[in-house]
Image: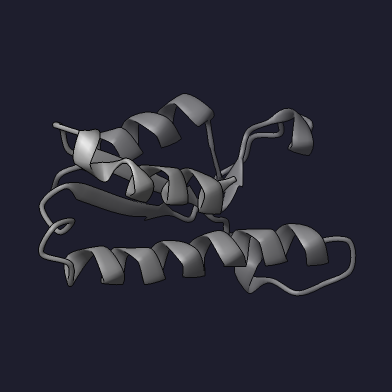
Length: 107
């Protein structure tokens, strides 16, 4: 989905009059290997690498560098049903994650 949304934006960039933000959601799981997390970790690694590569490309493009804000979010555990809504000192709740990410845009 990330790839297609980015492609769509780039194809229609001339119709945008406002700054655009891409938030690529990765995970600490992209750095952890182990059974049962291979596909999840690989998909999160893709999001991280894709975000870094596109951020680099945008920053070097005269027509995009002032238009696109790219952010890569790489939390540890997020309190979601995937983790049975478990909470501990390593988890973050979704609203806190979102407000932190949105608060950093443009900085």
